[in-house]
Image (cartoon, rainbow, N blue to C red; front, side):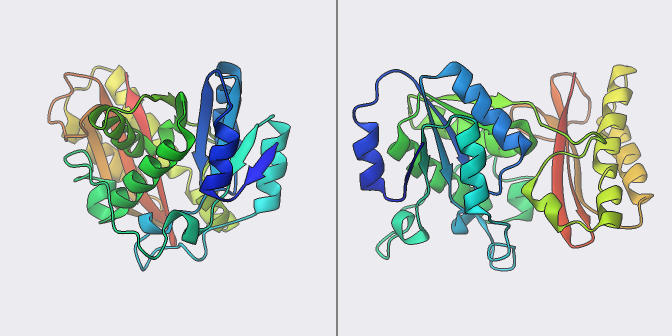
Length: 277
């Protein structure tokens, strides 16, 4: 496994590569969810590239950029075990030099949910992903369903900017009690960790209601919210039943829908979602 920290070094390694390239962009502090993406990339491609870069431009000033968990040596050990070929780990200065002044803005799908709660977040995501795709030139890039809105934004970038990359979305990897794996789970103390299971319980309730032929989206939202509010440590930011492609809120579920939510458990903000088949 080769570790490179500059764009020029990476391009030297990339130039002679033939065959398909699978790419897993990460912000590090890897967990089983990230590793499932690497395994899928390994199974489907001749070369696997992972990036480790905590992207400052997708964090608002009051968010947790400085405290975001980092363990570079551990990440490299985990990626090595998964037979990753190249790890690209640039510095902030490498990705955003002093002269940097170009941004990628995606409209519509970014205007609700995470985009409404975190202004500027998706501009940072879209810009760094565009830069990484231009550097890595992947055949396929792998993302987790947990960040469903992010995956839709990236699909939109690829389609609108005519990028020759396939976006592969992998099902959310969960703990045994249903909590979606996330680097931010490390912020939770034991009591908060137990309380955090309410997200999965609410999503499971939404799926059960839909499977029982409930089509009234507002009824499902209300029942989800009522369940979450029974947990004293939980504060709801949003509960959504939305079109699975556009994320427009639904009144009646007459197409494929997503249940999405953002909930604060103590000081930790968690997101999750589930398809309502």
